[in-house]
Length: 586
View 1 (cartoon, one colour):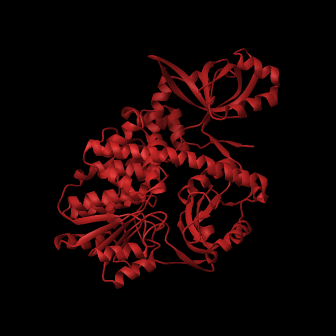
View 2: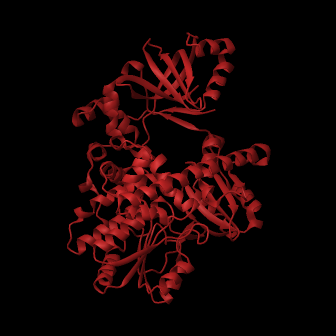
View 3: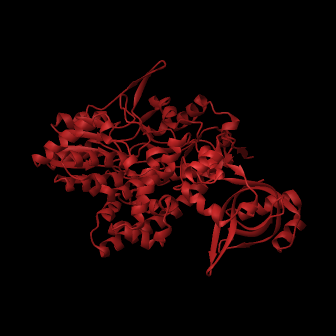
């Protein structure tokens, strides 16, 4: 059973509304997102590029800039080593483009997910050494690669780390001893002693900060790099970073540029996925563009996505974009099959009783483990790890819930793992096959989650009658965008909503269109996307077959529900009508 929570956060909404020219209702929604005080509200509503923090505040940024300036002047070979996901690919592109614009002799390499695994490894370093590379710059990886970086240093190479992941540590009682790699410069806002005021940047944003600082140090105008903000936005949303503080500004500014992008690759991907550029938002990055950019690294090579971003001609970009979309379509089918297998295993074994799900699917493509873990987390509302056979032992990916710090829980099992890394909400790891069952047991023995932690929480911003569902409120809600992790779409609620009649539509019968009336007698159109079968079963269970039959026959059924919803304008055949999108019901 879901737990519905109505937020009640106080402030002088009338005064905030007057000060910023918004409604008290919008002021309340902003306060619900823990934006407190006039200065924070102004930054939330009106923050621009000029409000971004100075990258030079990051520890070792000055060192990295000075090293790169010298290497560029000496025409040394620089290699960027990224990662195979959407963040790593965009970070690689940002560094590659920025360094070359700064006059550097730079190229790139990205590990193969299957052969190389995550991040920096000995083979990548040896490959760089054989190619005569003088300097390695990592992005979206490197903070946990102490041994590999030490090896590179022994070969005489210069190494700069740019990363955003948690710094590895060893525990001594309550104390944590952080293990930093012995690179020539380490840029990671999460490292001890870094005074950068915002710790939630993605790898691409950290890379952008380095390029911006380098560009300015070389006497160039940082404005020339503004087009790279679209890549920062794609990576920030695609890597599910919190859209708060600086990330909110980066994504908002990046989306503006993405809608009018001149990058042939991004333009081709937008076109081949059928997105209307004018309406492109964070949803399209997270659920349309992002999965296509990730598909190369999952099923083939992430270099395909990098090639797309680097494409200079439309014909080349169109072919690459089409290939990535086709790969993503295959990935969807494979994911659905793996999720079905995992659910079957959980439902028919003792795994169902575990508070932490650790599912071993030996035949699952290892690149899909994280996606499958995410689906299991959503379905069962508990942390989920999915493990699969790899070339060397077993690899796994985990996705977490808010009450469970995934990286720290993996650290508590470190002696069973050969490698691990990540952060609070997601992690990756490797282990020997014989340790799989012990790993599952240890995770559950260490788990302190309560039943209340594992109930889906539906956080409601406010109750709102249907009389307020107008074009004005829809227009005003756009001030809250971009939506995503850390800045969710507002959730409105209404009690005792009468269902006046409905019908199931869509090729897959996954759309329920209906007419509804709230307790005050206000009527509106409503639509529910999702498991319409479960919705109808719930109604039948509560009110009986006859009432359900009347409802689906578009007759008044006298059935009532409490619903959460979001208002929107429905445009069809040139006509605009108001409707609500129902998200939860009980």
